[in-house]
Image (cartoon, rainbow, N blue to C red; front, top):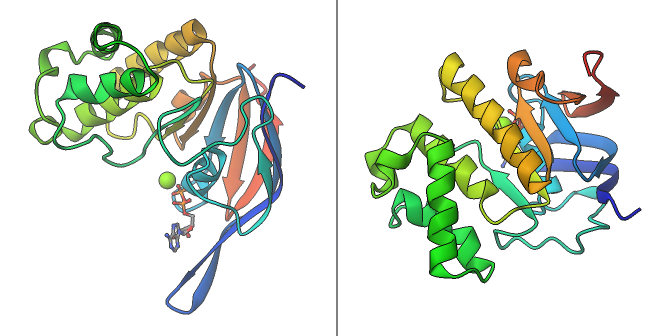
Length: 224
Ligand SMILES: Nc1ncnc2c1ncn2[C@@H]1O[C@H](COP(=O)(O)OP(=O)(O)O)[C@@H](O)[C@H]1O
Ligand SMILES: [Mg+2]
């Protein structure tokens, strides 16, 4: 049981907006183990981000249970053993790109030198070295997205949640990014859950889950 990172039973999340109730996720039961590689597939609005936020402890379920047996309680304060590469802009605006990427190492108690070395290495991996000293507002959305992924990997998470990580990349850059993401995950030894609607991105993962209208179907991909 040591390798069970996340266990969820009958997880549901409903939103009440303008008097209407939206069931974003219903009755999701699953386990995520150490080193798992999961592609969470589904069309826009199907509940992928909702599920990732629940897995990451950034949101609480309306009903059902979720626990992180091999990790302990997951707080909302990032970073930690569960890290998130967000779908939208997430870099801290006053910090440079390299400061953003170094932050998780510093917050985990690393020295400034360690943090800078780790951030420099990850910036190199994700083709951002030239942009290290820029502010987030001075770089493109795609570059911000790559920096967000680099930051999520800094500090060595046990579980990386990546929300449409290649959504703002061209195909060639997206493929390179996925190669590097998986290499880094192997190097660090973390599990990965990637929300995507791109089959090319999903093909990097051994396990495929699909979500449609808030219903999660878990299966192992035929190509694994
Ligand atoms: N904060 C919110 N308030 C109301 N409805 C929301 C909110 N967040 C998401 N939803 C709704 O929940 C459903 C799932 O959304 P989401 O998890 O973002 O899907 P995906 O990431 O697959 O595009 C959608 O119908 C969406 O409109
Ligand atoms: Mg989403």
